[in-house]
Image (cartoon, rainbow, N blue to C red; front, side, top):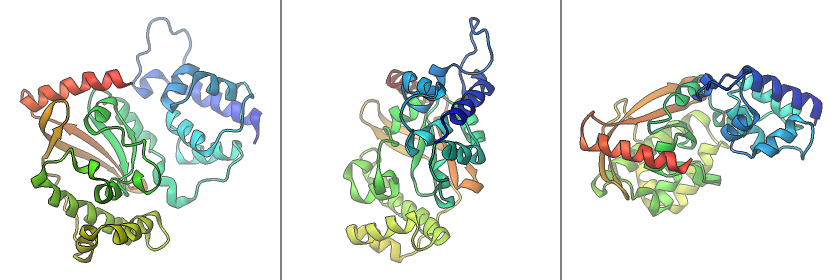
Length: 277
Protein backbone atom coordinates (compact mmCIF):
# COMPACT_ATOMS: atom_id res chain seq x y z
CA UNK A 1 0.00 0.00 0.00
CA UNK A 2 1.36 3.41 -0.98
CA UNK A 3 -0.16 5.75 1.64
CA UNK A 4 1.28 8.96 0.19
CA UNK A 5 0.16 8.24 -3.37
CA UNK A 6 -3.25 7.02 -2.19
CA UNK A 7 -3.78 10.19 -0.17
CA UNK A 8 -2.71 12.39 -3.08
CA UNK A 9 -4.93 10.54 -5.55
CA UNK A 10 -7.99 10.81 -3.31
CA UNK A 11 -7.38 14.49 -2.69
CA UNK A 12 -6.94 15.39 -6.36
CA UNK A 13 -10.08 13.49 -7.36
CA UNK A 14 -12.07 15.07 -4.54
CA UNK A 15 -10.94 18.57 -5.52
CA UNK A 16 -11.76 17.93 -9.19
CA UNK A 17 -15.33 16.83 -8.41
CA UNK A 18 -17.84 19.69 -8.16
CA UNK A 19 -21.02 19.69 -6.03
CA UNK A 20 -23.14 19.92 -9.16
CA UNK A 21 -21.52 16.72 -10.46
CA UNK A 22 -23.06 14.70 -7.63
CA UNK A 23 -26.39 16.51 -7.29
CA UNK A 24 -25.37 18.70 -4.33
CA UNK A 25 -26.06 22.44 -4.03
CA UNK A 26 -22.97 24.63 -4.15
CA UNK A 27 -24.18 27.05 -1.50
CA UNK A 28 -23.05 30.61 -0.93
CA UNK A 29 -20.50 29.83 1.80
CA UNK A 30 -18.36 27.47 -0.29
CA UNK A 31 -15.11 29.35 -0.91
CA UNK A 32 -13.14 26.72 -2.81
CA UNK A 33 -13.91 24.34 -5.66
CA UNK A 34 -14.30 20.63 -5.28
CA UNK A 35 -16.07 18.56 -2.64
CA UNK A 36 -15.52 18.65 1.09
CA UNK A 37 -14.19 15.54 2.84
CA UNK A 38 -17.47 15.00 4.65
CA UNK A 39 -19.33 15.06 1.32
CA UNK A 40 -17.10 12.39 -0.20
CA UNK A 41 -17.48 10.31 2.96
CA UNK A 42 -21.27 10.54 2.78
CA UNK A 43 -21.30 9.66 -0.93
CA UNK A 44 -19.10 6.65 -0.17
CA UNK A 45 -21.06 5.45 2.85
CA UNK A 46 -18.27 5.86 5.41
CA UNK A 47 -17.45 8.15 8.31
CA UNK A 48 -15.75 11.49 7.74
CA UNK A 49 -13.05 10.47 10.22
CA UNK A 50 -12.23 7.31 8.27
CA UNK A 51 -11.98 9.16 4.96
CA UNK A 52 -9.97 12.02 6.49
CA UNK A 53 -7.40 9.58 7.86
CA UNK A 54 -6.88 8.17 4.37
CA UNK A 55 -6.13 11.63 2.99
CA UNK A 56 -3.84 12.27 5.96
CA UNK A 57 -1.87 9.05 5.35
CA UNK A 58 -3.14 7.51 8.58
CA UNK A 59 -5.48 4.70 9.49
CA UNK A 60 -5.71 1.05 8.42
CA UNK A 61 -5.30 -0.33 4.95
CA UNK A 62 -8.70 0.07 3.23
CA UNK A 63 -10.50 -3.11 2.25
CA UNK A 64 -11.59 -3.89 -1.29
CA UNK A 65 -15.17 -3.02 -0.26
CA UNK A 66 -14.05 0.40 0.99
CA UNK A 67 -12.09 1.09 -2.16
CA UNK A 68 -15.05 0.11 -4.32
CA UNK A 69 -17.24 2.47 -2.27
CA UNK A 70 -14.71 5.29 -2.74
CA UNK A 71 -14.64 4.64 -6.48
CA UNK A 72 -18.41 5.06 -6.62
CA UNK A 73 -18.42 8.09 -4.34
CA UNK A 74 -15.70 9.85 -6.35
CA UNK A 75 -17.34 8.87 -9.68
CA UNK A 76 -14.13 7.21 -10.91
CA UNK A 77 -13.76 5.65 -14.31
CA UNK A 78 -12.82 1.97 -14.52
CA UNK A 79 -9.19 2.86 -15.21
CA UNK A 80 -9.15 5.20 -12.21
CA UNK A 81 -10.77 2.52 -10.04
CA UNK A 82 -8.08 0.02 -11.05
CA UNK A 83 -5.42 2.57 -10.12
CA UNK A 84 -7.11 3.18 -6.76
CA UNK A 85 -7.04 -0.54 -5.97
CA UNK A 86 -3.35 -0.73 -6.80
CA UNK A 87 -2.56 2.26 -4.58
CA UNK A 88 -4.55 0.60 -1.79
CA UNK A 89 -2.45 -2.54 -2.04
CA UNK A 90 -5.02 -4.77 -3.72
CA UNK A 91 -5.07 -6.60 -7.03
CA UNK A 92 -7.05 -4.99 -9.82
CA UNK A 93 -10.58 -6.47 -9.84
CA UNK A 94 -11.06 -9.16 -12.45
CA UNK A 95 -12.76 -8.09 -15.65
CA UNK A 96 -15.76 -10.33 -15.01
CA UNK A 97 -16.76 -8.46 -11.84
CA UNK A 98 -16.51 -4.97 -13.27
CA UNK A 99 -20.28 -4.86 -13.52
CA UNK A 100 -20.11 -3.88 -9.83
CA UNK A 101 -18.64 -0.50 -10.77
CA UNK A 102 -21.24 2.05 -11.80
CA UNK A 103 -20.34 4.01 -14.91
CA UNK A 104 -19.60 7.66 -13.94
CA UNK A 105 -22.00 8.92 -16.61
CA UNK A 106 -24.74 6.72 -15.18
CA UNK A 107 -23.98 8.06 -11.72
CA UNK A 108 -24.23 11.65 -12.95
CA UNK A 109 -27.71 10.94 -14.28
CA UNK A 110 -28.71 9.24 -11.03
CA UNK A 111 -27.44 12.23 -9.05
CA UNK A 112 -30.04 14.38 -10.80
CA UNK A 113 -32.86 11.99 -9.90
CA UNK A 114 -32.57 12.15 -6.13
CA UNK A 115 -36.28 12.95 -5.69
CA UNK A 116 -37.31 10.05 -7.94
CA UNK A 117 -37.30 6.27 -7.37
CA UNK A 118 -34.30 5.20 -9.44
CA UNK A 119 -31.55 2.63 -9.18
CA UNK A 120 -28.73 0.99 -11.12
CA UNK A 121 -28.73 -2.79 -11.48
CA UNK A 122 -26.32 -5.10 -13.27
CA UNK A 123 -27.15 -7.97 -15.63
CA UNK A 124 -27.42 -10.38 -12.68
CA UNK A 125 -30.19 -8.40 -11.01
CA UNK A 126 -27.83 -7.02 -8.35
CA UNK A 127 -28.68 -3.49 -7.25
CA UNK A 128 -25.54 -1.34 -7.14
CA UNK A 129 -26.96 1.97 -5.96
CA UNK A 130 -30.37 3.50 -5.21
CA UNK A 131 -31.91 6.88 -4.59
CA UNK A 132 -33.66 7.38 -1.25
CA UNK A 133 -37.15 7.22 -2.86
CA UNK A 134 -36.17 3.90 -4.48
CA UNK A 135 -35.25 2.56 -1.04
CA UNK A 136 -38.60 3.77 0.28
CA UNK A 137 -40.37 2.04 -2.62
CA UNK A 138 -38.42 -1.21 -2.96
CA UNK A 139 -36.40 -1.48 0.25
CA UNK A 140 -32.61 -1.34 0.54
CA UNK A 141 -31.61 -3.83 -2.14
CA UNK A 142 -27.89 -3.13 -1.70
CA UNK A 143 -27.79 -4.68 1.79
CA UNK A 144 -27.76 -8.29 0.57
CA UNK A 145 -24.63 -10.45 0.32
CA UNK A 146 -23.59 -13.56 -1.58
CA UNK A 147 -26.00 -15.05 -4.09
CA UNK A 148 -28.82 -13.13 -2.38
CA UNK A 149 -27.45 -9.92 -3.91
CA UNK A 150 -29.32 -10.99 -7.05
CA UNK A 151 -33.06 -10.31 -7.15
CA UNK A 152 -33.25 -13.28 -9.53
CA UNK A 153 -31.99 -15.50 -6.71
CA UNK A 154 -34.05 -13.92 -3.93
CA UNK A 155 -37.25 -14.20 -5.97
CA UNK A 156 -37.04 -18.00 -5.99
CA UNK A 157 -35.58 -18.52 -2.50
CA UNK A 158 -37.02 -15.78 -0.25
CA UNK A 159 -40.82 -15.35 -0.05
CA UNK A 160 -40.31 -11.77 1.17
CA UNK A 161 -39.01 -10.82 -2.28
CA UNK A 162 -42.47 -11.36 -3.79
CA UNK A 163 -44.58 -9.43 -1.31
CA UNK A 164 -44.36 -6.13 -3.21
CA UNK A 165 -45.94 -7.73 -6.30
CA UNK A 166 -49.59 -8.65 -6.79
CA UNK A 167 -50.26 -12.39 -6.62
CA UNK A 168 -51.61 -12.45 -10.17
CA UNK A 169 -48.44 -10.80 -11.51
CA UNK A 170 -45.95 -13.17 -9.90
CA UNK A 171 -45.92 -15.90 -12.59
CA UNK A 172 -45.11 -13.30 -15.25
CA UNK A 173 -42.36 -11.84 -13.06
CA UNK A 174 -40.91 -15.32 -12.50
CA UNK A 175 -40.70 -15.97 -16.23
CA UNK A 176 -39.15 -12.54 -16.87
CA UNK A 177 -36.41 -13.05 -14.26
CA UNK A 178 -35.57 -16.51 -15.61
CA UNK A 179 -35.35 -15.06 -19.12
CA UNK A 180 -32.90 -12.37 -17.97
CA UNK A 181 -30.82 -14.93 -16.09
CA UNK A 182 -30.75 -17.17 -19.18
CA UNK A 183 -29.31 -14.26 -21.16
CA UNK A 184 -26.68 -13.58 -18.47
CA UNK A 185 -25.73 -17.26 -18.31
CA UNK A 186 -25.40 -17.52 -22.09
CA UNK A 187 -23.14 -14.48 -22.12
CA UNK A 188 -20.94 -15.32 -19.12
CA UNK A 189 -20.79 -19.13 -19.35
CA UNK A 190 -19.62 -21.78 -16.90
CA UNK A 191 -17.64 -20.67 -13.87
CA UNK A 192 -19.30 -17.25 -13.82
CA UNK A 193 -21.43 -15.63 -11.14
CA UNK A 194 -24.43 -16.19 -13.37
CA UNK A 195 -23.64 -19.91 -13.47
CA UNK A 196 -23.36 -20.03 -9.67
CA UNK A 197 -26.81 -18.47 -9.32
CA UNK A 198 -28.31 -20.87 -11.88
CA UNK A 199 -26.71 -23.97 -10.34
CA UNK A 200 -27.98 -23.06 -6.89
CA UNK A 201 -31.52 -22.29 -8.06
CA UNK A 202 -31.77 -25.51 -10.05
CA UNK A 203 -31.30 -27.46 -6.81
CA UNK A 204 -33.47 -25.26 -4.60
CA UNK A 205 -36.45 -24.16 -6.68
CA UNK A 206 -38.65 -26.56 -8.72
CA UNK A 207 -40.40 -23.51 -10.19
CA UNK A 208 -37.10 -22.11 -11.44
CA UNK A 209 -36.00 -25.48 -12.83
CA UNK A 210 -39.27 -25.84 -14.77
CA UNK A 211 -39.04 -22.35 -16.26
CA UNK A 212 -35.33 -22.77 -16.99
CA UNK A 213 -36.03 -25.81 -19.17
CA UNK A 214 -38.48 -23.72 -21.22
CA UNK A 215 -35.73 -21.25 -22.29
CA UNK A 216 -37.81 -18.04 -22.00
CA UNK A 217 -36.51 -14.99 -23.87
CA UNK A 218 -36.87 -11.45 -22.44
CA UNK A 219 -38.93 -9.01 -24.47
CA UNK A 220 -37.98 -5.43 -25.25
CA UNK A 221 -41.14 -3.91 -23.75
CA UNK A 222 -41.39 -3.12 -20.04
CA UNK A 223 -45.08 -3.27 -19.02
CA UNK A 224 -46.53 -1.18 -16.18
CA UNK A 225 -45.57 -2.37 -12.70
CA UNK A 226 -48.28 -2.96 -10.11
CA UNK A 227 -46.86 -2.82 -6.60
CA UNK A 228 -48.58 -3.30 -3.26
CA UNK A 229 -46.58 -1.13 -0.88
CA UNK A 230 -46.90 -1.80 2.87
CA UNK A 231 -47.26 1.91 3.69
CA UNK A 232 -49.07 3.55 0.78
CA UNK A 233 -50.92 0.61 -0.76
CA UNK A 234 -51.38 -0.17 -4.49
CA UNK A 235 -49.20 1.65 -7.03
CA UNK A 236 -49.26 1.54 -10.82
CA UNK A 237 -45.87 2.66 -12.09
CA UNK A 238 -44.01 2.81 -15.38
CA UNK A 239 -40.38 1.72 -15.49
CA UNK A 240 -38.11 3.64 -17.87
CA UNK A 241 -34.70 2.12 -18.57
CA UNK A 242 -31.31 3.37 -19.73
CA UNK A 243 -28.82 0.63 -20.63
CA UNK A 244 -25.04 0.82 -20.52
CA UNK A 245 -24.07 -2.09 -22.82
CA UNK A 246 -20.33 -1.96 -22.02
CA UNK A 247 -20.87 -2.80 -18.36
CA UNK A 248 -24.22 -4.60 -18.62
CA UNK A 249 -25.89 -2.15 -16.28
CA UNK A 250 -29.33 -0.61 -16.43
CA UNK A 251 -30.66 2.55 -14.84
CA UNK A 252 -34.28 1.97 -13.77
CA UNK A 253 -36.53 4.99 -13.18
CA UNK A 254 -40.03 4.50 -11.78
CA UNK A 255 -42.68 7.10 -12.67
CA UNK A 256 -46.44 7.50 -12.41
CA UNK A 257 -48.99 9.27 -14.59
CA UNK A 258 -49.01 12.94 -13.45
CA UNK A 259 -51.96 13.77 -11.23
CA UNK A 260 -52.86 10.13 -10.62
CA UNK A 261 -53.29 8.54 -7.22
CA UNK A 262 -50.05 6.65 -7.78
CA UNK A 263 -48.30 9.95 -8.50
CA UNK A 264 -49.45 11.31 -5.14
CA UNK A 265 -48.23 8.16 -3.41
CA UNK A 266 -44.83 8.49 -5.09
CA UNK A 267 -44.56 12.03 -3.74
CA UNK A 268 -45.29 10.70 -0.27
CA UNK A 269 -42.65 8.01 -0.71
CA UNK A 270 -40.14 10.67 -1.77
CA UNK A 271 -40.66 12.32 1.60
CA UNK A 272 -40.31 8.98 3.37
CA UNK A 273 -37.16 8.26 1.39
CA UNK A 274 -35.67 11.60 2.40
CA UNK A 275 -36.16 10.63 6.04
CA UNK A 276 -34.20 7.42 5.48
CA UNK A 277 -31.01 9.19 4.38
